Image 1 (tube, rainbow, N blue to C red):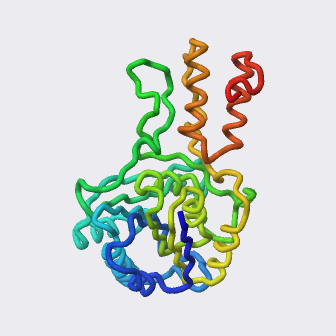
Image 2: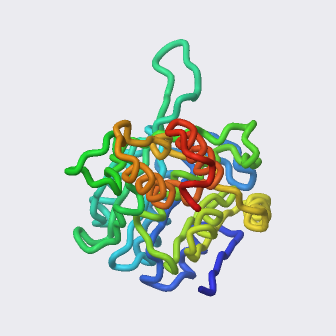
Length: 302
């Protein structure tokens, strides 16, 4: 595949206008939340109506470029999410699929009120029924081995637990709201196929581009700040050792694999199904499995 990973420095609304109609399979993006974050060339402090007008403009163009079977995943904070929902459903007539909660274990501390521990992701489709959703690509391991269970895994549900990309993480870049690669991995695997074109009009440090690079998708990443575009380009040139985040359930092995032949067959499948983009985690899991079951190193993949 002649993969195209395109970085564009410019205003999101104006740059989406340049994209031909119905050419994008998936839009996955983390726009500014209007919470006064410092994004350099864009100050996140519009008035209430200005922010909704800005959102309405880029979302209108987003709908135009989506294919008829396309989807949009939109990160959003609690202050504006209900208004964005209305724009998507009532004004643009897109079709609601899921309200995803990204739960993280650490966040802002508060002494009056409850400390926030989640962000939300709205998932809408252009058509109510005809849209891409590859459930097998995003399943999570079962807790137990049962003949009636689908051992390919279970639906991950709409509450996702991924750690923040902390500042001590080797994959952390100079961006105030960098999102985990594991979240974008799930979104992109679920709602696109290899060779499809993904758009992130607020690409920031380049997470969507980096994930598409590894998943054999094409991607267009737009950002108004030239500094972030340079970060994204640099990120694409770096060696890949696995995504920077993982749903911890992916390391879960069924607790009752008592049959030796079933165990060996299952662990091979487990790595291919759940950990193929996280080779270090896969290696550690295999070592633990071999040690637990007194297998000789290398037996499983001899």
